Length: 85
Image (cartoon, rainbow, N blue to C red; front, side, top):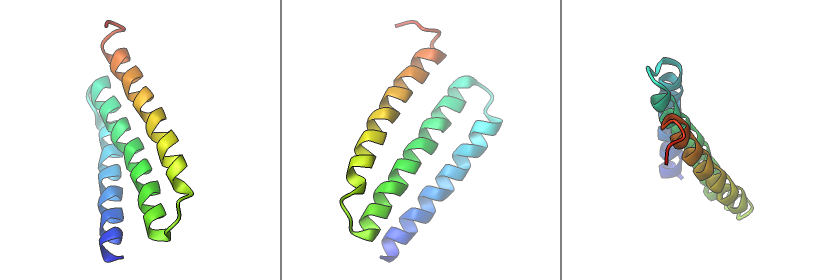
């Protein structure tokens, strides 16, 4: 249980640093990467909460959120590249 609590704290700290990077990032690519970090940090928080509560209900939410995050990361990368393939 202590290891899960430590992981939760570390993920929250990384998400806070990601939000700072979103606010202060010099370019759109930096903001996009930080947005991915914060989103996937949120997904990790959901997964760790599922482990801590010993429930399998959150696995479906994590799976769907990961797929949505992957599509968002691809679209952000294409947007920062100017729409080029």
